[in-house]
Image (cartoon, rainbow, N blue to C red):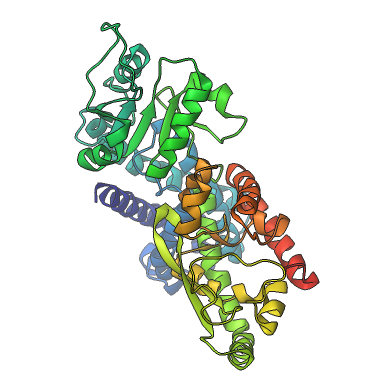
Length: 472
């Protein structure tokens, strides 16, 4: 609720300052331009239909632009310096857009007026927006520093390094405002050196219960041990809790070879559960998912009808199948597919298909070859369960088997699963758990290198796979 409340404050501030900037700019514009176009007084100009329409629409346009910049995604993780440059960049982009879509329609008496209009609009938009944001950010920073708003965290470790990290991140100037709920003992062996042993609230055996009890939002790992194998084993055991996992920066050399890391501003920690997707890309991807899904569902509606008829006439049973998969945030959802197997194909329990599987129906084999059985998942994308591109969602039954050998699978729950994935286009269907883990290496590569450009490449590969019929 605190996050939503803060986002609303930024939205109101941005809307009002954008409206004020446009109002003042129109006054300036009147004396620069409008007086040459037959408006006798400022009052007449300000009451002009196009001016009034702009007064309403322009502020909403700014909000849309700010949303796609990712500004509202993390309202608590802001600094005055980054806010300055972010606001400056978006003000320039927005002003350029308004200039070419609105202001160029009116021919001035001199081209110098073009530059003046651009300059006035940019300065007004930037200065007023930044002033409003700065006021809210400074208010929030004060609340964070006095700990009326903080991130609840556990430190895993109770030695000297844990004590150092605890002191560092609880300093008054800490911009993110951590509140350490307690320390967790990570070793079953208690050291005899009482000088470095700090009080703990529990150990790894009851960590899940403690996370719920203390409402912990993040886990910070700080071990005295120099054993890298011990550290990695501990990290792999933490992914299942689906919380951000932070490490001191001195571990970065160990991790950058296999995991994506990000430095957290203001404190010497790196986030090993983050991915490369910027906040702007996340919002753009989410919107494109929705738009493309609507387009496909409408455009291919006749194809859906044809496939439904063929599935129904090919074999007895329902047209669609629904399976529970684990998706974003580790939450289960129902995935939809055209049925490609005989009815009760899994009456003896979950079982993966293979190339010569006699459970696959004749028409089902054709659909699998061209990936047509996946088409109903555009409905899942529209609902928000899935994305067009992302790691392939799996059933809990197989996840429990996979994580015994590849615990990092839990990282995939930090993003929405996809209809298609790098693993699907490079590896294809898997017929056993071993192959599923092999395919996961591609999805892990995707997770560490996520970008809109990579999504486009995967979609192109997918279209090629559909056209050439390289599915099984």
